[in-house]
Image 1: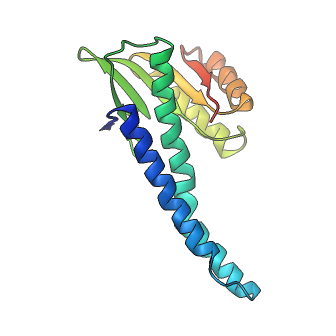
Image 2 (image 1 turned 180 degrees about the vertical axis):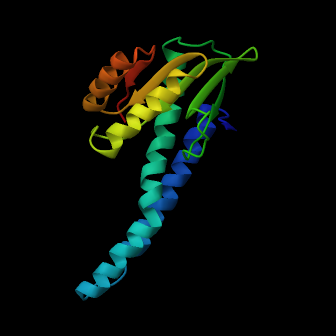
Length: 170
């Protein structure tokens, strides 16, 4: 896990990532498109060069927002040190966001930017919540939509886990 740093630094990282991806989108979308083949080539390049970033940058942003929410709602001490996996690069023992204070983990949080709990997203939610339930500190699952929140509550109740679900607007 990486240290999050200040929220301002984290927001600046997210903004720089957004600007980089939008630069790529601008560059590719300004290419001449005179035939279906040319257009398909541009769309292919657009997907290859931006797909992963489109998902990961939203994830990064919601992690920062989650840490801010945890502090604002007094779910942890103001002096909490934050660690994150901004690009979902952690191993199975690490959450997306971890807060530590006085040498102890006080918060473990997982974050999803998925819109609807269907198919792979639904099964991934189950695995993520089971993993989160085993972590230290108060446990939180941050979502963006009411559908994801409701599904998470159902899975948490069935699993008998102590995890708080929080819906954050983007």
